[in-house]
Image (cartoon, rainbow, N blue to C red; front, side, top):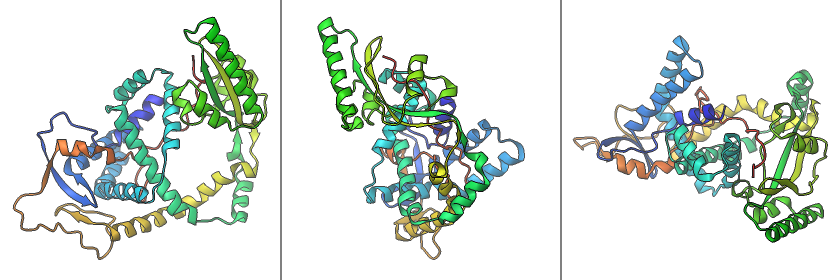
Length: 390
């Protein structure tokens, strides 16, 4: 599942880099301080078609989807550049969410060594770990802009939310699951004296957590697992039916209440401290537990026109020039986006090297933007996996 998710994400990305920097690229649009090249549009068209085929879309449906993508290819690129630029203007920060998502991928891959995990990302996506991370960050930034600038200003009456819950209760029957955070104290290669010190430290951390000190802060400052420590020790959710925890841990955490902190648990090369952040029983979820999910579902049909209006406003305020022969299907009415250097005899160009230098600005298509775009690069669900395997 992880491999397929990463490949689908990568399939929607513009080309991350190019070995031959001598090849000249035609610039087809300028969006404030960014550019869009013909090569990027062609690569996006090809990769979206391949991703649709991997998802089982074929025949007339594939032809129609490819035609729709072709029509909106430039629009989609402009949309995402404008959203990322706006996110930076608003000083929005997605670092914590990014760390959590990457930790989920690494947990699901079962690769604890950072260098090996980076190699794994390169093998699955065709890009470096740094490029993959940067492009994922940009995608999360676009989602946050839409959340803060549009979603936060919409509201659905409480009565409508409750009505939907009452009429669709079967949608909210869920499996038993638990949300955990961890602190890892390494004992790998330690002398008996050092192991005793590690035990003492772990015991002290448990006492501090049980007295009410913030577990996430304790994890950031003390955990020896660098991936989860950055995000306060937070782990992906675990469903009991998946049996991804070993039996000792599963029996322990699935019978505890929210806020429970374990004693230090001895593992082969570490001491593990777990906190139960949340636990849900199997069965019918209450209205309050799923209220946010219902809100998002009912807001979705209203979101598309709102986002399109917002993107039109961003276009109106942007420095935007488009080469003759290319069409922005989301153009702002009345805005002049004609290429200004009309007397130039040949099109303005850039090199692959210059494009590569800008690649960190390019975006993952994790969210479907307005206009009927297929959510080919939809972010995979939170991956469930065991805590760190010392």
